Length: 149
Image (cartoon, rainbow, N blue to C red; front, top):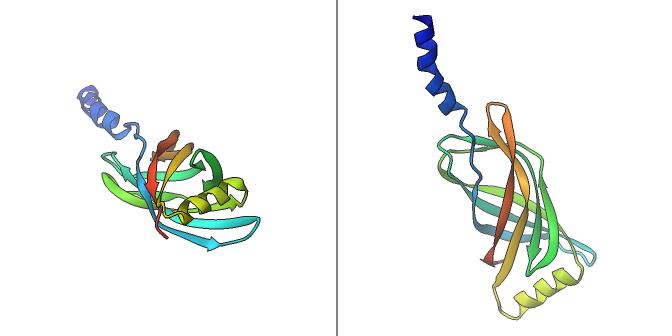
């Protein structure tokens, strides 16, 4: 009887230990310049993602390099834990320190010409998991993004 009950619990344990899948990038909202300087500026935004998992997960940390129009724009890190709901969209606040070099000036010139779309490329990884088991997942995205101030 005891062996039978253990075998019946095995499928339940296998489902509860399912490996989480990565998030789907949906876009950027609430883009704002928090601090403007000649050498370095600080930009804030809310990155929108969708969690396709059938269970909630926790994002523990992450690091992403941001490229705009194929030029390195800056790096952002996430060092706090964020609870992500199951099968739902969520906003991830992002703060990016931007070196006001030629690439940042090119972005300002592009936006000044009236174009509100730029090519965004994200390259990095994040630790996501649940029940104390975390796995590094790659963050990869490339596409056109409308930016509104």
